Picture (cartoon, rainbow, N blue to C red):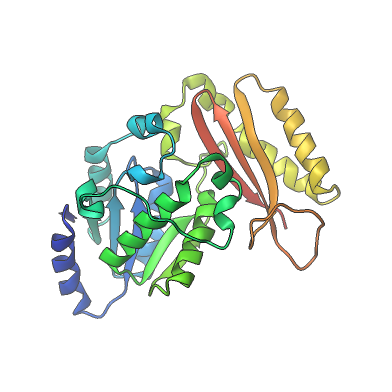
Length: 282
């Protein structure tokens, strides 16, 4: 396994690989790797000759400075995990300067309104930061395929829109949410949960499953009110939002249409740790 900290190093490695004319996959991460990340990398390894995995905590996508400071950084463990997983991995672990140069700032993007829904309402500037770093990483790595988990479904849709609007030569692949045995969606933030909050957190997915069943016979307003009532009974979990939206536009559902696909999105605070999840409804 090769580790590169500078984009010039990475380009030299990848230029040699491209002479073989084989496909290159890419999984961008912020480190603190877990089985969810490995599931993305595994899918990429099945479909490509080589995988690039970036490890970079992107400062411009954090609307909360404290969250950036507290974000888990486990680089040595991440490298050990990747080394034991496959030899067909190149790690790109750049400095902030290598990505941003002298000016650490996000660019403004227009994602046709996708950025204003759900997470965009609660995390100002977040998707500008995501768009900035992902576009830059795509330009540096130049992968054939890039893999993203559906846990961050809104982010997945926004990156697909980024590729479309900027005519980037990469195919974005959405991958199923990887869950712990009790249903909790895998996330680097899970490492920061207290024992009590970790025990309570599976209620999020249990509620999503129940909401999906209700969606078959109830309207979006009724399901949303029911979810709110369930979280009112939870002392350790605080519901920030629950929204049923069109999978394509991410606009909140008003009237069901049989030709459209819908998804339920949820954000919950477990103490100071913010967890998100979602589920396809039809």
